[in-house]
Length: 293
Ligand SMILES: NC(=O)c1ccc[n+]([C@@H]2O[C@H](COP(=O)([O-])OP(=O)(O)OC[C@H]3O[C@@H](n4cnc5c(N)ncnc54)[C@H](O)[C@@H]3O)[C@@H](O)[C@H]2O)c1
Ligand SMILES: O=C(O)C(=O)C[C@]1(C(=O)O)C=C[C@@H](O)C=C1
Image (cartoon, rainbow, N blue to C red; front, top):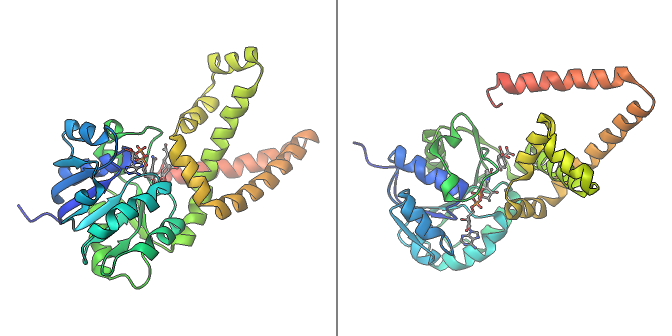
């Protein structure tokens, strides 16, 4: 058997994504030791699941001796975690993350990054509406994109190692600038979540009788939105607070398009509606063809 890619991988925040990564590392024998750092009863739960070798709520101890550290907590926790681990990171350590937002996370880490520690930010674009280590699974990453956003001066050896880890977990790798990542994800992931939260919120605000019927007669369309709107409140609060500009920009365009549709319905412009729905149906087909459905 060949040597593992990493000696000691510390995953800080062993929830849905962190625990899925731990499982993939195990399956592919990519780490000699996997250690979880988390808080409350989560370390004990991760240990009980048998997905890590060690688990602790002492984040400094977790990263000591690690050649790869992966931040797996909601992005708003980044400053607190960096404060706890920075004194314990050795030169040569690769620091990565799985955050849904990249630019703000890099801005939070870079000023406190110890000399010689190499930052390779990442975002596995794969997930579910569930949270916690019990809900992770190694296959989550299969056939999905993983976007890495290292600064231009980061050694390619480190970028390649992180890329190889995600590739062996089943992902397809793309490297891009953090700002660009945040603009793309604002439309493909953040806005859809905001819309889902809004629709389900609107339904919940209807008068009692109506809102009970929304749940009772929940048609497929609404049901799909409730899945997304069931996503983790803390994670998504942090996404919107930390990708503010890109989300507000795309929301402005969305609002204009929605207003145009409102007019089309009001004035009975069937051809406008049909033309848009025909274009969007083709986009759905393209997503299916790209095996991302
Ligand atoms: N859920 C998804 O679909 C998805 C997909 C890709 C990336 N992400 C990103 O992955 C990260 C984690 O998301 P998740 O869905 O795994 O969340 P999760 O809630 O399942 O897990 C997060 C874990 O972080 C821990 N945590 C929070 N604050 C902490 C702190 N200060 N110190 C130590 N541990 C702390 C929590 O206890 C929890 O175990 C987020 O940054 C999110 O943006 C999520
Ligand atoms: O399938 C889902 O539940 C998701 O929302 C996953 C999803 C997405 O928007 O595609 C959510 C956030 C992540 O950063 C990456 C993936």
